[in-house]
Length: 59
Image 1 (tube, rainbow, N blue to C red):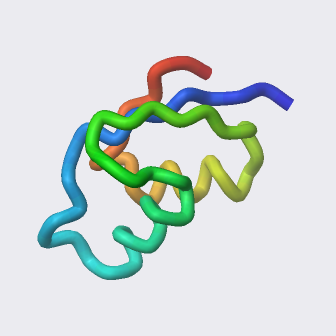
Image 2 (image 1 turned 90 degrees about the vertical axis):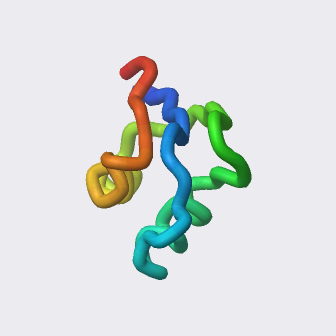
Image 3 (image 1 turned 180 degrees about the vertical axis):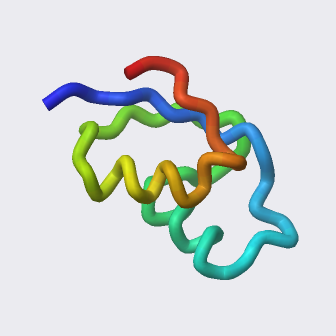
């Protein structure tokens, strides 16, 4: 499968607990961190849930 690169561009302060948990489950630990994930339906659903906090660098 293909991979996508994600960057966290906004903080989770004042976000609901489920969005904080989603960011943590994706593997983010700090702001402006870039991670690379497999492009599975589960990961894409998580990205869609917190899309306002992330930036997709490449698909």
